[in-house]
Image 1 (cartoon, rainbow, N blue to C red):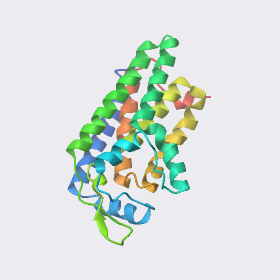
Image 2: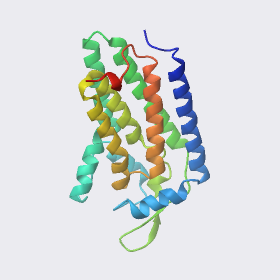
Image 3: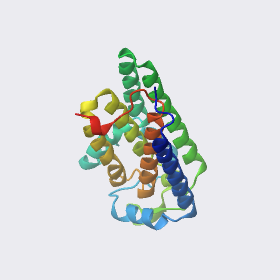
Image 4: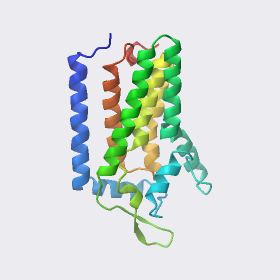
Length: 229
C-alpha cells in the first residue's frame, strides 16, 4: 500500500510547501528583483523584449526555439523541450501506459494525476502573482521592460523536468540517475536561453520536489534512487 502515513515524507512535503509559499511572497515583495535583474544582465545572452508574453509562453510549449536563434541556444532549448507542457505530458502519459501494462494502473493514474494538478498549480500561481518590473537592453540599446517575466514565477519547465524524471525513473529504474541529471541541467539552461530568471527556476524546482514527495505518498512503488542499480 502507499506510504500515506509516513511522517518523514509528510514533514518533508510540509517543509517544501512552506518554502515555496515563502519564495512566492518574497518574489512579489521584490526581494529577488536585484538577483533576477542581474541574471538578465549577466547570464542571458538574449531576452525577448517584444512584450508579447502570451505568445512567448504558448509557442515555447510547441517550438523550443525560433529559427533565428543561435545554434547553442537551439541546442539548450531542445534539451529543455521534454519539460514543456506538451513534451512532459506525452512522457508522463507514456509512463502511465507502461505502468498499466505492468499491472500498476493505480500508480500510472496517480502519476498522471499529479502531473495535471502540478500544472494547474503552476498556471494559477503565474496568473495570480506578478513580480516587480525587470528590464533588458534591446538591439537599439534601449532598456525595455520584459513583460514575459511579469508572471513567470514559478518556472513550469523546471517543475515538469522533475516530474518527467520521476516518472521515467519509476518506469526505467536503471536510468533514474541519468534522467535526474537531465532534470538538474534544465533550470540553468532555462536561464541561459532567457526563458526564466533565477527565482523562477528555484521556485519551479521547489514546487517540483514537493509534488514528487506528494506522489510518493500515493504510489505503491515510489521512486527510490538509493535502490536503483
